[in-house]
Image (cartoon, rainbow, N blue to C red; front, top):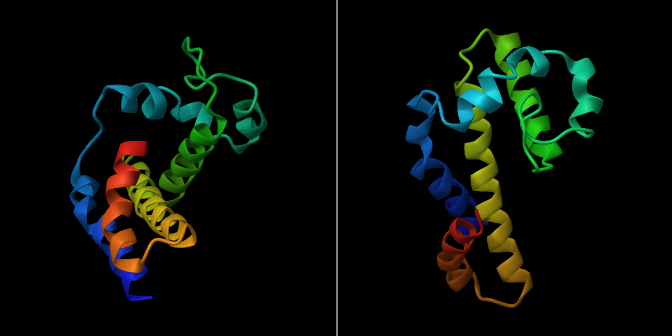
Length: 129
């Protein structure tokens, strides 16, 4: 379990500084702040699967799970009384570290040795994002 734990910690610590960043006011504003009232109501969950990614704006992208994470982030932020950027940054960081770990596991399942998989998995994940 040494390599998976080290890999998760490495991926997490590499981007941990992002937890101190505020909103970018590019898509953060549109997706998080622009839809905060919508995401604050758990009753809107079914609507996330019936609309495009920007909910209130125009878009041709269908990304319901992205919006589910935004809703979860908003609900957690509201419940804990935290600023609107900390929880989304933390969840993205955890998703990234977990995705890196999944890439490692995929390489191991494909027959790659542990050391090579450890080296390749962060590089592969970054290219997939």
